[in-house]
Image (cartoon, rainbow, N blue to C red; front, side, top):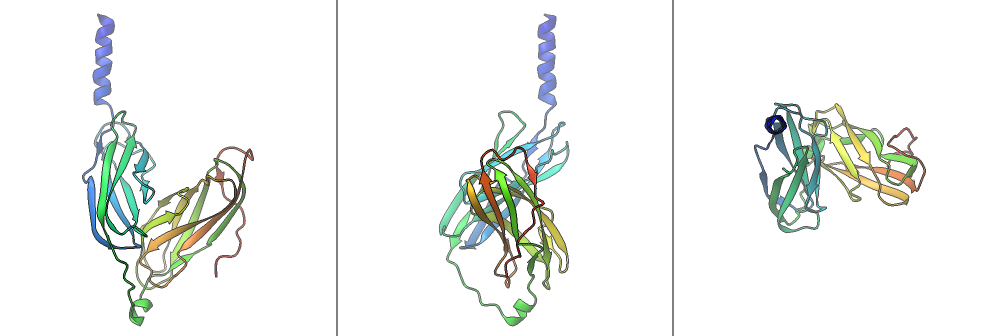
Length: 254
């Protein structure tokens, strides 16, 4: 009887001692967006429980949606975010995308939804005054050559971005065609003359020479090259573990 009593006490204790994922908003409607836009929305997350909450994975229902989320444990009463970016390029019409959120709460995956309508692309003509007052993306370096890396290894690389324009630079999202890049953005809005760092986790899935382009979606109406290039030669059995890049870089794009 004593063992059964202890067992039920443990069950009761475990039921009350756990994180609780609270999502004030579970769906977002972008309305009508222009084709080619990288539409981003940030969902708020709160831990309403009494143990740390860990968001272990965020899985979109298709490759057209790129997630980013708070990677560090969210303490009881603390807040985090989940950002979803929808790539509307070549996808006209209505869309509804499901995003599955996996945490350390066993058997309690949650879902978020983004939806909207992609209308035709309109080539906007900007005035000289608008161009003069535009923010401007400037990378400290725009080409990163990591040399030889092993299949399955992850490169951690910080990229410095400066706003050399006349108004606030807003980073709406970051896309990579290889779906082999995750990122953490410290500041989504950068004042004129200020800089921020974007930390990338780069894990190429294919072997041989790689040249993967990572594109920023911003409100910069002048710069054409809002991207950085990650290069590597992926080989089997080169080493193990994660790498922090220290390799020299070729000259940036002109």
